[in-house]
Length: 414
Image (cartoon, rainbow, N blue to C red):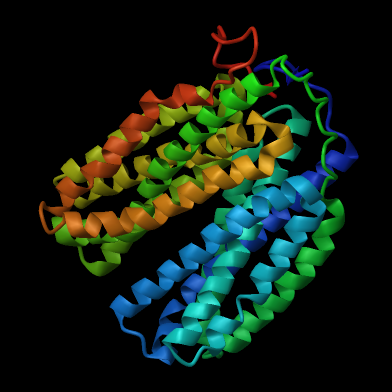
């Protein structure tokens, strides 16, 4: 039977020491993932110079990283459901850490391409495994905790940017920096492993012909819809990553140093919003977080596009980040709760399509700017956010006897 966790305002049982330890371990892996990938991003220019790849070739090579990540997500989902997070999360973290080294040694484009496929594969495995474990931790707490994990991922990336900038400033070789980070990541992956939770007992199977088929048919369309929403919202995030600074520079004539503040405002708002989103989800429910968050993001980006001056545009990019901040974690949580026995597979489906959206966003805006001004092209992510706001009801559980839940605020764990 499904269990209903305490709703907003209803205190649940205090978390056990084992559950708190599992949460701390999950924080460690999210921070590690953010740090490893952030350190790679900081060293992209150095690696590009070493391999002699031009911008166009580098763009194609980075797509190989995305392809590797997508493959890793598809592999890690079923493995996590079968073997559990204590096996797949440390393995994914160790692979991601070790795969950070080959790009620094690549002497040409073919070697770099192969290295990026491996790095992407490790990142994808860790991403799905740790998110599936985060769903399990959230289920144990009986209240939203997913957004905080994603906030710590962002913090890890910020720390990597600072560490990478310091290393580059000291003139340290990329191989030394990335190799040291890989060794540290491998140690952390092993040290945090004992804190991971064993898989929950599988739910009792329903008798044949008494709902098992109906349950599977109900879950599949909902998970597909969650994956579509992840694609659209992570497309918006990808657009902000690559086009926010260019928007201020190209549309408003801001100098490069000022234009860079657009992404800084977006990223800061994303991190801060994720630190607050769990409390909002506990009070108002995940549907409301997605609905009003996506609506705020649409309004914020529309403001940035229409802004006549830099301060208003920066305010718009800030609102865009704040609105998006809590949306994707709600989708991951809902995917994992749709069927606890297939949490890894469902999270992989949503995360995989979302990752493709993040890659597609920047790539789509570029060709659009050949047809319309950049400001008009940015109306595409505005429309994506508006659609997500309208479709937020996909987060609402569909249970037998609860097809029309009276409140969006109940936090239900299936």
